Length: 294
Length: 277
Image (cartoon, rainbow over all chains, first blue to last red):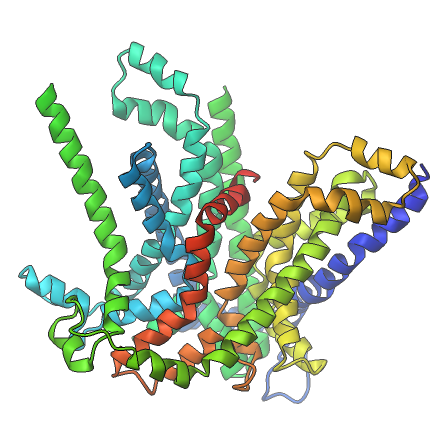
């Protein structure tokens, strides 16, 4: 078979996808980097190169620094909460019983709803206005009502809880699939050695969940970093700027305020953080894999 | 021993019920509220409605321009998923079968999109789409959904699957004299059915639930999707929950029905997306 001729056909088969990807993904990403070094905004008629001035501004403005910190804090916390809960649920629900199966599919259900709809639903559930469901339940148990979304100290965590509620089931089904692939004879051998269930979990289950853990952690972390919808509908970044995230800031600066270059510079910071996160995780997971294999 | 066992079973039952309550109460609350009057909802938020009335739904459907918005959603979702299936399957096939350095390089470039979110490019992307007069068109949303959001994962999943398809089938077809291109569509593409449905499901969920892209790209009411109709109505109905909640239900109803019918395939799709990694 003529490889050259075949490669020519191959080229035209891959070309539409690659061309679209280049024009709509690679090119704008590169432009974001270039524009981050300029003064591009609706207020400047003339485009000028300004060096790193935008970055200087980002790291001296309390609002953007806060947004950056919120996104990182949120991403790390949601990764921990979501994965710890999902592993626990997976281990406890991974049995052949109709009740466990039903609970499994109900737990997954919120993952097919849009983040925006879940956000609005919980905005009403958590409202401090009369009739907020969560506060009424708390009061019914004799507790004091909490200003879930209006208190700057806890608003970010309130949003976080709703997202953990929504996405734990998604991670859980991935863990369950991984659990099913673990050889049952390993547990039998451990039983013979007289290992308790806690020991079995840490010695067998957790190390062998390695593929699902590394995938889920990377996904939650990146997903957490780009969080936008939930904050946008629940708190609009408020109260004050207590729940501003990287994406809400980029959208506000770029679209509402017209400070395009500034928004691009913040996107570049976003890129660097995601890049560092994924590199660090890959390194840590490779080390962990080596340790397990050894 | 039996006492311990019974305690264990009771403990497990309590665990199951607690998880179930935490997951179900918010959804139950959403649904029952849609059938209540405001006074009723305030008096007993978790009680069953006194009488079932669809008046709230009628109002919601009218305020949302439901038929038109649903049609917009379907146009965007169906076109995007079709384009993704066509482009991603061809690309994945080439990447899986060729050893040519150029295609390897293209693959590495696609895989960058798995890690680096397209949101980084959002400002230049938006200006570019506006520059070629695609602002306020479904085409713009479809382009972003296809190339910026879903293409890398779709290629990645399909490539993994194509590696498991034996090459002998193609070789036989090529000897019979059919070209590379026909060979792909006639022999390989039909064999990809399981992975095509996985990819279609994952892409469908991502596209239907994407709020940011239409929010930034579609301005006129005739073009907007269901989630934007919800967003637009939250202001006017902010104190009238019993009228607003049906909109939340109606915006997600198509996907919930999809989940109830295709539950097994959806969960398999999510798992395939992870395990192949």
